[in-house]
Amino acid sequence: QVQLMESGGGLVQPGGSLRLSCVASGRTLDYYAVRWFRQAPGKEREAVACIHYSDGTKYYEDYVKGRFTISRGDVKNVVDLQLNRLKPEDTAVYYCAARYGLCSRRDLNDMNWGKGTLVTVSS
Image (cartoon, rainbow, N blue to C red; front, side):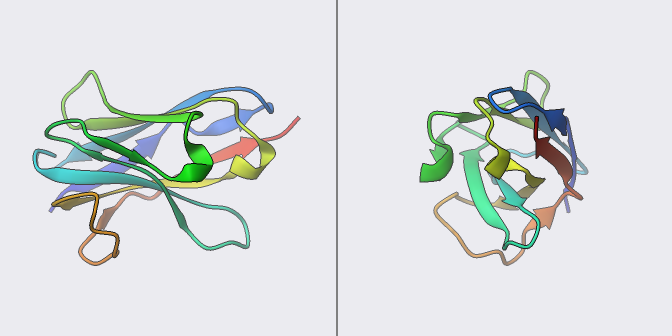
C-alpha cells in the first residue's frame, strides 16, 4: 500500500503560479499511474492530469492543457503539478492518487489517495 501526501497549495492571484507536490511512501511508484484530481466547492471531483511514473508519459484533461504540467519530481517517488496562469475557477482542493497500472484506466477502484491541498485563486 502506498501512502500519499500533497503539499504546495495556497492563495494566489489570478494569472499566478503554484507548484504542488505529491510525495509517496510505503513503496516505490515504479509502474504506477499517478493522477491529480481536484474538487471545487459544490462540484464533483474531476481529473486533471496523469503520469506513468516509470517512463514519464503524461496525459492532460483539455481544460488544463497548456497551463498545468505534471512531472516526476527531482526526488524519487515524488510527482509534481505545476499550475500556471491560474484562474479563479481553478480554486479547489487538489488531490493526488496512485494505482498500479496505466493512466488509460479511468475508474477509481483501488486508488490510493492523499488528503489534498487547497488552492485558492483570488485577488
